[in-house]
Image (cartoon, rainbow, N blue to C red; front, side):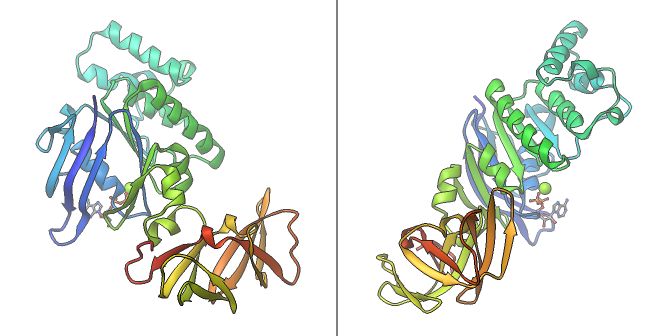
Length: 342
Ligand SMILES: Nc1ncnc2c1ncn2[C@@H]1O[C@H](COP(=O)(O)OP(=O)(O)O)[C@@H](O)[C@H]1O
Ligand SMILES: [Mg+2]
């Protein structure tokens, strides 16, 4: 069992502004949960509060249903993997992985067995004698993972562990970390600002903004049913269009559309860029910019004065005008003041 529960968690560094603003979250045993949000929204702070590296202003952190607020970090049985790897530069890969076990006065033979086991599982066997500076970024990150795994912690905290890697390696390490999670059967709390990492890796995604949880759900629910405009805009490529709805009728570029939702007044309509080329609602617009992304094109245009985009197949006709086809059923409507979905 290694659940992590955050109860009314608040953190203020300066006694004035709450950078973590009353967070409630139950992370289940063996869950792979991803905390995602833009820089400064409080992701790292949450991990530091869970690990005990930072004091809690108010609220509680529970691990295995026990309040750990006053338990020192080293006794929380948690492993932390950082973006910067934080390896000891003067130690070999072997000693970097063994360090935590040596500190715990575990017998040498047992340490040796564990280090070799972990090195094997991470493809580091050949590199055990090297120093960190003799390794590539991906290899260093694997050593950092090895050092975390070898202690058999109850919970893994990972703070943007792939941010320093180049794009290809990042994709590869994404699936390696997922495999690791399946093998270790431990709770993983993974922080990223990257929506693709969040969608591909998380059993559940927690979208954060300004120290508050905006939505915590499966990737499918986050993508298909965003609770508010922030989540809708953060995950995927969403178009937002100002419209005025009158008994279900609203105009986009002078053309009348109809929703059977009970909406009236000025609201923000939204539709994903990938939902603009099939459906029974048709609209012609002038393409401003066309971008080739490999397997498809992204076309930019304006709807009611709002800059919008569509992902279209390579063989889709684009001339002086482009025909958008969509279904009003694929549209979302958000309250202009609160941002909540209608
Ligand atoms: N040690 C600190 N002292 C004061 N403010 C901090 C400290 N660490 C982080 N902050 C502030 O708290 C907010 C959240 O930071 P952080 O948790 O690092 O965000 P993230 O990891 O999502 O980028 C930011 O506004 C940041 O400037
Ligand atoms: Mg951070």
